[in-house]
Length: 183
Image 1: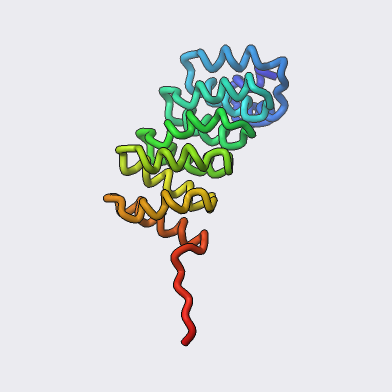
Image 2 (image 1 turned 90 degrees about the vertical axis):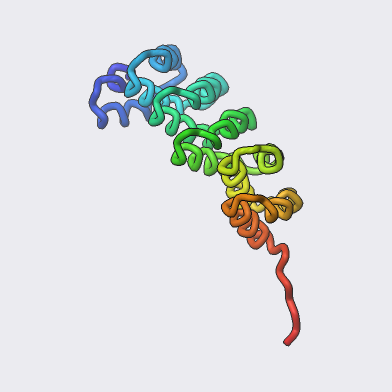
């Protein structure tokens, strides 16, 4: 299986990534520690198909990989995990040098769902980086959780227009701030 994954043939590797089992985990972990970014990328792609805490922990660790392609796939894959432990590396990825990876982290946090709301509220309220606050506000807007309403109202006064935009979007999605009147 791993021979196909690391053979250098994308078609064979894609098929092999979907057939990995827990028995392949040691080989995948070894590839993650290697110098070849393509092998690390395919290892991440295979780990995304493996359930369990070992695969999740490995994906969390590689979310900070030096190669942006590997980081991107790891961040994307973490959004498919059903465990709140993935929230912390995803929050760190909101400030990735790559806007693409930061956006993937935002979308992954949305896929994580309700467990991400409280950490996103703290990030929106505390982070000094405007782009991180904007990504947090976007995730909260997409999640549309009523618990975020006070933080989104506060974010309407943020110095960043992007933060303000996503705060408005989130509040509108939640149906807050609308004025109804009879003509």
